Amino acid sequence: MAESKTLEPTLKRHVHPIAMMVVMTIATAAISFCMFKFPPIMKYVMMSYEVDTGLMGLLMSSTNIIGFVFAVAIGYINRSYKPKWTGLIGFLIMALANVIAASTTNFIVLIISRVIEGAGMGILSNLTIALVVAYFKGARATATAIVNAGMTAGQVIHYNLSVRLAEKSGNLSGMYTYIIITFVVMAVVMLIFLWREPSLAAFTPTTEKSADMVEAEKLKKGEVLKNRSLWLIAAGMFIFNIVMISFNNYVPTFLQDAKGLDSVSAASLTSVASTIRTFVMIALGILADRIASKRKPAIASFVGICIMYLLLAWLPGNLIMVYIILSAIAPASVTVSTYSCYPDIFGDASYTPVAHGVVQTTARLAMLIGSALVGYLIKFLGYTGTIYVIAPLALVAAVCWFFAKEVK
Image (cartoon, rainbow, N blue to C red):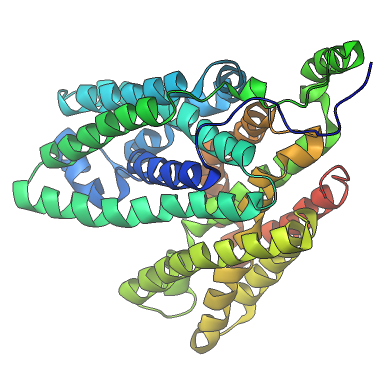
């Protein structure tokens, strides 16, 4: 049987890749309303429900439960069904969860609503990345970086809007109202925008009646979860979430206690670094596409993270800007390289939802245990001792990426 010369699917895509990137960036900004919902208005939640910081931590982390347990299953769902339905259902689940949250005064019910909300967030965070990777070829890293920038944009919008509404009304009703409206509008947008788009399973290389290709496809379905490179980059993402996201929650306090900064300066410097990192991420995404490599930038990022934390431990307070600048640059390639490399591993974009599900499983696990783990390390080893533990972990992640040979 003669094989076709192209590895691109023969289906017709009705949405231009740039349009897909723009809408998925907006969707990601909306998803961030769920992810960052409570931190800016924590005091109002604690007063309304009469809970302490420990229970607040449980509330904020509860969205990761579904993402951890069912991330791979969500990947298969997003691969098998048309995105208009999974996108619609994902946002409606999140809207329903916020209706429940807005109507309850019971903290346990509020936690249940967050678990439900996590299911919608899991579907959508997988779908947005999978669609962008499927629709882009030569600029996947750039497109992925731009979509991730939507998360920061949404965080900035939500942090400003939620606090103002809470201060104005003295309760959480205003915040829930605009979040519910946003999710319902986005559900309709996803349905209309993706109306004619095929399922992601259709983005598979095809041949003209090739029995060999059919058998290869069946084999890939069975082997996708056994791929060594996929699990190596998933291990890298687990480490990244521990050393960057979990430890970062404690950095402002460390800057105050060990480096002599006041609370406002410490918080401002870390937030500025996060904002700058968004633009650096896009620039490094462009670089990754130019050099046609995701592995090299990821390895460099993990080495940079190790150096960054050692400088945090060693530098005096008057030189801490060196750490801040490096913290804006060093980690930027990890997420971009990870999310855009799935077609390198499997040869096409159709398995991106499943591969992303594997990575999200380890990422959510790190989010579930990371803050508590780092907190205990700080309790027993101190901040500097904890840094000496997590800095070498970044090098372990770099080694994982080095041996992920299927990634270019």
